[in-house]
Image 1 (cartoon, rainbow, N blue to C red):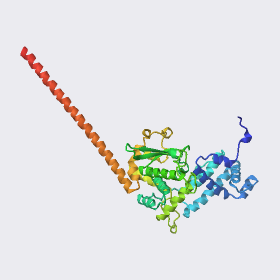
Image 2 (tube, rainbow, N blue to C red):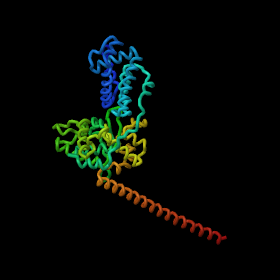
Image 3 (cartoon, rainbow, N blue to C red):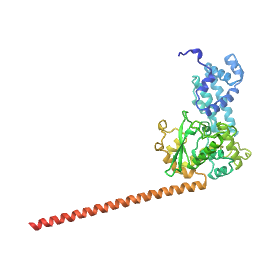
Image 4 (cartoon, rainbow, N blue to C red):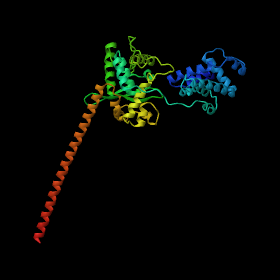
Amino acid sequence: MKIELKDIDESSYSNFLDSIRNAGTKRGYVRNLRKFLNLIPNNIYEEYLGTTPESREIECLADSFTRLAKKDIKVTKSIIKSYIKEINKEVESGVISPNTVSNKIKPIKALLTANEIDISWKPLNKMFPRETKSQDRAYTKQEIQKMLHHCTDITDKMIILMFSSAGFRLESWDYFCWKDVIPFKAENNNYKGAALRVYRGDPEEYWTFITPEACKILSLYKEEWKSRFLQYPKDDDPLIVSTRFDFPHRLKQKGIRARVDKIVTKIGLRDKLVKGQRRYEVKLDHGFRKYFNTMMRRAKVNYLDKEDMMGHKVGLESSYERYEEQDFERFAEYQKAIPFLTISDEEKLAVENHNLLAEKTKLENYASEVKMQNNEITRQNQAINYLLEELKSIKKNQESEK
């Protein structure tokens, strides 16, 4: 094997794409970069490069922009400043949120960085408007209960319950396989919950958990899978499949989003926007993630454990996760939140009864141990008293002999 320079692709756009790992991030970056590059007129390239892009395709525009940046960084910064000013006008008019401004600039920074072009971003960052607190809220438990009531099939129920009990992002559905679910069962064979691997094989991979309620739906879904495909799913089969095919074909995030949108519309959370309103009160998929985060806080789950279960990198231990139940130390913290994350009132009551029974058994075992310890103390005290009496008797006999 040998390396030849002629085999190396020096395309500015290819370098940009190669620098982005996450597929969802890549799509957003490409969309925003295309918008920015299309705003730069050909006459600017003609003036400073003496040539214009071969076409208005993003690959050609990216190449021309990076050549301009390498030749005249001052002009490049002026172009970016002008773009930021236009974005700020949209913020002032209420078209976009001030929180999205940085996301529109990140692709430009990624393009320049990927092509080894240094630029001082500090003065440019100061042009960004002050970010505001997000106004969207989480779904309520009552709203999620309504969603389950309006689900047309078990696939919809599985989507809703897994979303709300694990708090993962929408694009996670493009990764899930059956081997990513590791169920935990009690001695009576009832589900205690399950571990769920998110983004398998991706640098952002992490573990979270799902509730016993979601496990039951998943088990029913597996039986439906068998009746449909005449066999149980294999480990590498997609966790959720489209109903349009006669073979296991993954239902990707676009299809998941469409199903959720249909359900949320049915319960009245996707009515027409009022005048002057640009966003719905609850984000379609992120509302579940916010619900998960809220319930975990109400259950007083350890903050670092909660962040880890949401895929937020807060420590160095994520690289050392293992696969056996006894090694999922964070599941004990997740169990605190199961009553809060359980949607069905009947299921919640069952969880609470199970917890009460477990607590009762624990107390009974403790009482039994205390009783045994008291009996043992009583026996030892009797033995000590007997020995003391024996010693007194021996001493008395010795004194009488004298």
